[in-house]
Image 1 (spheres, rainbow, N blue to C red):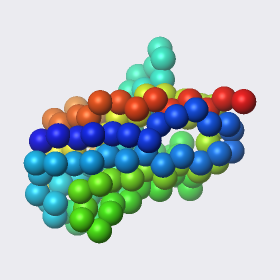
Image 2 (image 1 turned 30 degrees about the horizontal axis):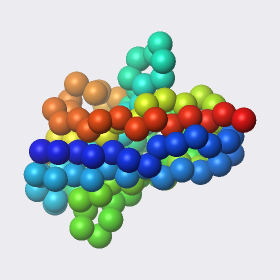
Image 3 (image 1 turned 180 degrees about the vertical axis):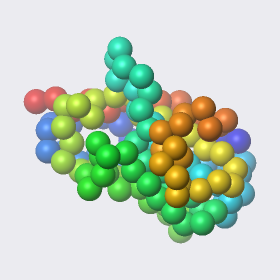
Image 4 (image 1 turned 45 degrees about the horizontal axis):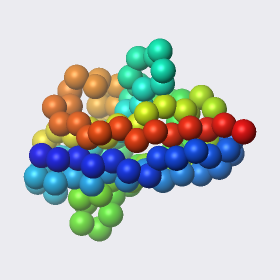
Length: 128
């Protein structure tokens, strides 16, 4: 299993950015992919989750209504559309995956230990 995250960058407050996570080596109709982030000096935080097992999504309250997780038609690329970015969104963003499962439960977003497969991080910096 390989996950490749991309799309980070430096943006200003209020701007938008789209991250991509390309997933290979997993069943396309039976996996759960989540985005996590980690800011300097802080614990890793779950952001959003997408499951192709049951077509569910879930979000951390801190990003709900600002971030949108989605997949492409092949279900092998998972996007994180981030709108109305704020400085507190500055972090290294990681995508992670596991076979099967669902995003129905909130710990699908919050529990990093549930995910055995991780990609490299991509830096997102929100600054004026």
